[in-house]
Image 1: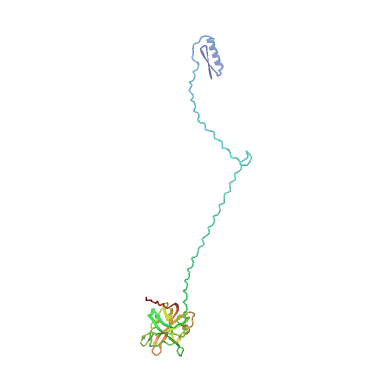
Image 2: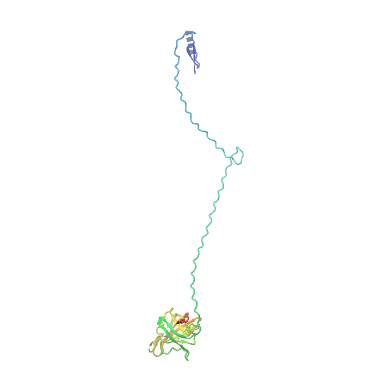
Length: 287
């Protein structure tokens, strides 16, 4: 550092730095030559002061606030300064197994109800047969006569002079009654075709109607048509007892011989499927 003193108009500069011995002697000699108290001419300083460069005032930097210390979480247990307890992981919930949905039980489709069989027709009390109708064969209201067994135990045919008439075995069940009713008729006569000329042409399912003396009608449905040789005629099959009302229609068939006649018989099997009451007569009143 340099200190400047002004004494009697003379500026003196002293350097605070230590001088060596040579410099001290030069300074002392110079002082003696000038003499103490003699007026002195102004002399420049022995050194040129350095230019003072103004030091720029530093712009204060914005102070960054000190980070606030995050308070430590309070330890629920343990002494201060002790080690933190190792946090235990919470137990993870065990996922429950999905409940199995009950499988729908397949429902079996209901079996279709079996069609009920039609009720059996009522059995009719005895009453003689009066007429026979087979619409399929074109037979309409053919007259019926009663027949009985001959001396040899055979059922005779109606008289040949009545080719359009049929005979009913009157000693057996009546039409519509329990058992087997028997009706016979000619296939042909000397005069030509008779009432049962086309009997073998009838088909199962066709209808045969017999009207009785009491006005009721027994309705039969054809089951089968058979042909038997007369020499091997199955009497039990044709005339045997039955537990329901049935009907047999019989006529001649097979080969024809002038001496012996027809060699076979055609038999129609049928059973009772309905009965009809007589139609009521309506009376008309005139006023």
